[in-house]
Amino acid sequence: MRACGTSGASVTVRVPAKVNVQLAVGAARPDGFHDLANVFLAVGLYDEVTAVPSDSLRITAEGHDVDQIPLDRTNLAARAAELLAARHGIEPHVHLHIAKDIPVAGGMAGGSADAAGALLACDTLWSTGASREELLDICAELGSDVPFSLVGGAALGRGRGELLTPLSVGGAFHWVFAVADGGLSTPAVYREFDRLTEGTQVPAPEADPELLAALESGDATALAAALANDLQPAALSLRPALTATLDAGTAAGALAALVSGSGPTTAFLVKDAQAAQQVAAALLDSGTCRAVRVADSPAPGATLA
Image 1: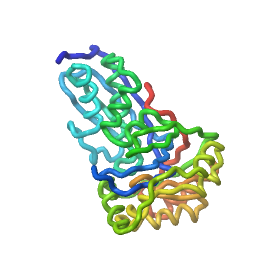
Image 2 (image 1 turned 30 degrees about the horizontal axis):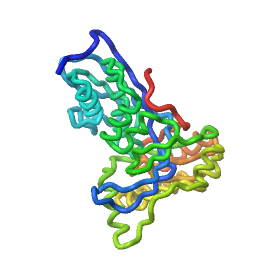
Image 3 (image 1 turned 90 degrees about the vertical axis):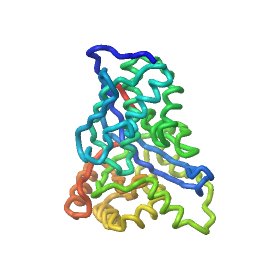
């Protein structure tokens, strides 16, 4: 394999978090995954991934809770660099620095965002000239949420979430996110989903037409009525204290509340920016969460900074 890199070059990519406004989960497949109808919405909380030439593959990080992420080749960002390099016959000699602002292990695709950011940063740094289709193919190999982190905006994810159809969004939606103490393992939440649904007929996952219409019209009240997450009962089973957080947000005036993805971050849809500040303050005062974040959606996908 050949070495590749530009001396002194530096490439930074900004990549967003996501919230699942609908997460419909089917029964476990023979391969252990679940078919999904996953309506992604990118939100304006961002990690930044910076790639610079190096003598080897290195990962460093700064920001909230970075002690909880691996800084070796098990990090999804490192795997992204390795997969891209292998396809183009080069050594993955790059230093990837991750500046984290997306909650870690919070159900907002922070690790997937870092993988998408690293992939675009390395493609640019190494001038591999990978097509959009190739980048999305690598994303799908890395994980179910990674393709959406690259694309951003809004999309319906089918299969295990990696098969994307872009969706129209007719306006801005305002959110408050409550960050819990500690994380939740996505595989553990899916195992709990399987346990809770054992012996029942799990319906095939389908996108809700009313929810898609609410997104397209930009109607926050209609979207609030349609929000749904089939993993929420499993997340609450593993972390019952999240119920108090959900209750505190709705009592403070949120239009709707749900667990974000596999959790434990909870998401609150509000009517406008002023309401977001009020709900955020009430959640902090409630003592039911560690921190709160306010963000709008939709947001662009991985973008060169």
